[in-house]
Amino acid sequence: MKTSKNMKSIFVIIMALVVLYCQPGAAAETPAPAGLFKKWFGPGSLTLQFENDRIANTDRHYTHGTRLSWISEPNEERPVEFDMVPALLNPFDDRDRGTNPSTWRTGIALGQNIYTPENIARADVIEDDRPYAGWLYMGLSLYNEKRRGPGDNGWNKWDKLNTWEFDIGIVGPQSYAEDVQTIVHNYIGVTRPNGWDHQLKNEPGLALHYEWKFRHRARLFGANDGAPVLRGLTFDLMPHYGVSVGNVDTGLRIGGMIRAGYNMPDDFGAPHIRPNLSGPGYIDTTDEAGFYLFAGVEQRAVLRNIFLDGNTFATSHSVTKRPFVSDFSFGGVVVYGRASLAYTHVIRTREFAGQSHPDRFGSISLSFNL
Image (cartoon, rainbow, N blue to C red):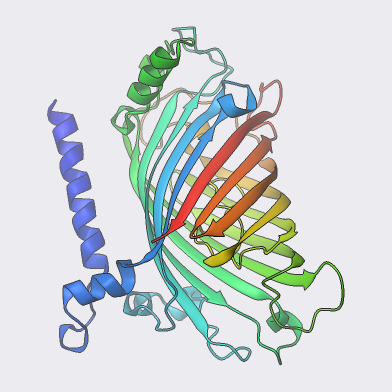
């Protein structure tokens, strides 16, 4: 189809923009493209995430999410691309705070989310249930991490992670959500989804996410000396807040997580697909085995959710969204060497008027340091 060819052309252009994103501000002062690629898109952490409601023995609403992401190794040099961001929008610039320098990471991701009503056997529009919808996107991300030093006090006692992510993609038939769900359901022999003719219409999607996360780590037994404790029995507390802006997702969020384990990796939690408690998806390489358990909560004020509000520029099926939604998450992570395996169980409160009960789904992620 001509539309399909056009969409493929758009994604080719997007991938070309990714390459341009890595280019220098002044060609004479930067390395050759191969060196630049190695610097910002070389060795790092590769993560495959898989979220599905079948894992939690349900089949409704946010029914599936897949995301493949790569995040670079840390670098103490600030990316020149970020100099374009005005100072008022630049909470990353904390290089003069505390005793340790900031480190930077860049990332790229490809993902797809699928949403359906509860009764997928019906072929008509279910007015009081959420629309069929898919979201196919690419994300570019930038991370700034600030570690506490031995002489730091006050808020400088907390490790900090600032995250910017820009997602661009397509909502509607060109997200290929219908094709994916139909093929999978036919293969595993469960109910065929019959209402995709009423899904949201094609619409380009944009979303800019910012998150500020803190981490305080201490020993489970004995006094902490003020330095990060990376081995033995430890626990940490990680509050966070964030904001999202775009036609796909606009809102505010606040939450936190606690973790406790043995040889716990030096990171900011297991990765999840937005909207959810988020971790960046990079892991601490260690020659020893480690594990931890975690529990967390996130409260969101929802101003815009295209998967409930419907299309921005066209008439489509929609429902009345609830202004506040909470996620309750718990799970565990196992780390050995360069690999990390995580499982999370999520309970999400009702998202729209008429929804009879909360949703739940499971999340599995596998990360590997290249």
